[in-house]
Amino acid sequence: MMNGSRIMEGYVPEYDATIVTRILDAGGTIKGKSMCEDLCMSADSFTSVTGPVLNAHDRTRSAGGSSSGSAALLALEQVDMATGGDQGGSVRIPAAWSGVVGLKATYGLVPYIGCVPIGITRDHVGPMARTVHDVALMLEVIAGYDNGLDPRQPANLTVPEYTKQLTGDLGGIRVGLLKEGFGSESAEADVDELVRAQAHRLTSAGAVVEDMSVPLHYPDASHIYSVVHEGSLETMKGNGLGVGWKGFHPTSMIDALIKGYRTRANDMPPTAKFNYLLYDCITTNYGNRFYAKGQNLSRMLTHAYNQALSRYDVIIMPTIPFKATKLPNKDISTSEICKMALNFGQMSNVCPFNLTGHPALSINAGFSQGLPVGMMIVGRHFDDATVLKVAHAFENIRDSKI
Image 1 (cartoon, rainbow, N blue to C red):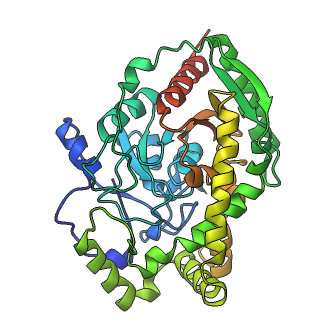
Image 2 (spheres, rainbow, N blue to C red):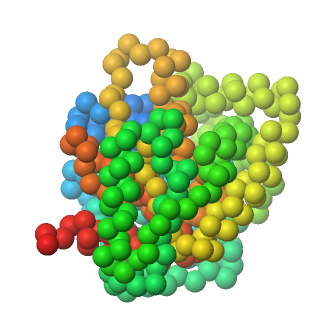
């Protein structure tokens, strides 16, 4: 579980999140709440209220965010499984830089009730672990319909036994290496080369691996995300939920956010202040025009990926185009904090799939210069099973001593 915001300091919920209840009912033990970035508004790991979350492989570097604590605890083998929230990559980014497995499941597959929303069209919560099997096992437990409490979910949800489909056999599976996911402006050559080489090893499990293209992916997709991202920050003014949707509304959480925003606004992290002011400026001058345009373009983006996934079972690319960055020194300026923590180059491959809702998993492709490199596997809506199957087959190949 995750925790971390001065805005909500002292708030004790009167009920568990749905995923917590399901974990407990399945026999799991909640060891505690891991630290995340303050208000979850950073793709890095230096804005949490208790100080930086350190990378388990190099303590001078970021663990990735915003689900930074969950990834670090897994990498340090302090817990077996963890959860993370993902509105723009916040499960997959720390999974990549910490060398663990993190799944942003299909939008709506895992109920979000009991987690603080950031954007109802982008909210995901998902499993994290050191192995694909443990991620699949946890998904079996936490996925499924939440009795109409969560409007993100379709009513006809079914949850397969994901673990039974981890056969290691990829016969008939077609894998596309997304051209636009490699070689971006911020990409490091060793990251691109490692992910490409490792993906081609899937042929030994029977897969067909070849290059393919979705021109809208880069750089357009992250630009589309940026306006939808800012628009959905209405949840800050709407105290976590806003209005206009059916489902369960946790009133005590809303009360805590109202109190926090009104009495402790200065305690918000610089990233949240920046986003709040930017959103306020945009809406004051242009209303919701850009948000609306972004949502419309998201439909085009979803169609583009769906077209590609009609030809391929999964799409692969680096999770993050570069290796874990150095943590900043203590006298870093506010503008530099925002520049580092809200890095769309860091998010360019991950954030598009928050808009489109496709399942996307990060798995460690290996190490370069002693640092983990994440490989992201993306699949069709509600075909999380194939994503996990491909990831598990790769994990077997990667760890094989032959």
